[in-house]
Every structure is written in C-alpha cells, then in structure tokens.
Image (cartoon, rainbow, N blue to C red; front, side, top):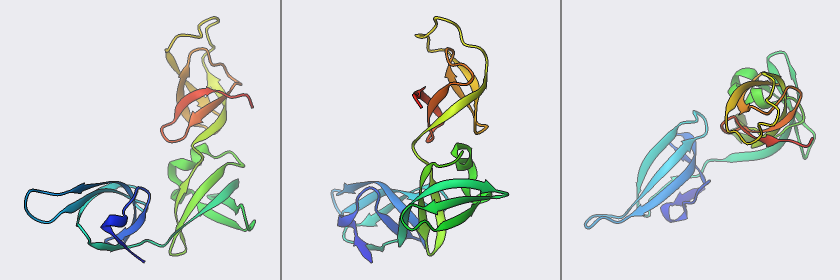
Length: 188
C-alpha cells in the first residue's frame, strides 16, 4: 500500500530505504518559490534511531506491513524469553539479545506490545508503568516525606533507579519504563 504525503500522520508505519519506520512528526513547508515539501521525523523501528527526511508534496511512499499484537510475558528460559499471544494463547520465544534493556522490566505476567515485520519480531514495547519491589536501598529518614532528595535503590528485577529518601526496602513502587524514573508508591 502506498501513502501520499497528505496522508502522513504520527504513528503511520512506512518503508524508507527498505527500513520500517514510524512517523514521529511532520511539517508542511511552502517556500517562496519552488515546490512545497513535507519535512518529517521518522523513528526506524529496526535500529531504533531517529531520521529526518524531506518529501516533495504529493510524493508517495510504500507502507510498511507492520503487525502489532498484545502478548503477555510468561517466563525466561535460558537465553530466551517466552511470550503468549493474548488472543490465540500461542507462545513465542524471543532471544535475550533481541530484547536488550527491555528484559530489566520483565518479572512475569507483564503485557507487552510486540511488532512484527515480514514474520520476524521487530520490537518489544514493555508496559509504560510497572510495579517493582525495592530489594536494596539505604534506610529511609523518618518524617522526611517532602524532600526531593534522591537515593539509589535496586529493584526486584535487578535494575537500579533513583528514589526519594523516604522509600524503604520491601516497598512496592511504580516506575516509568521509558526513562526508568520513580513515579510513586504502589498499592499492590
């Protein structure tokens, strides 16, 4: 399927130089003379790099045949991580190498979006927020709940993040997986 520049919108998946990309942003630009152009920022779904490309107005590009499905992380087995399709209950294995840093957010039962391109796993998106248990940190200071001072804490998945000084070992906290920041205490 082909898309014209006037069909561009954020999130649209297209092929650029035989690479699957998602449009982050676009801007229509009409210079004083010459042809109007569409300036775009693209996210390469395979290499995870951001590209900038300019297209002539009315130019068309090939759509990328990307399939996005919801999967649940079940468990790790050796170097592979096992995920289950939420609709068909079919299980797939993804290598630790393919997951990269994402594996730090997976303990079990997290729901992830997996992108497929040409039958291969392209990308795994963990949930935006996860709840983790603080397994190691310095003791908190009693009564200091308003300070914005941070201290390092190791979470149940082994990752280390910065948390407020009133957080203690054994507490459940909510973490943003996009940048690894503390969001708040969890009631789980």
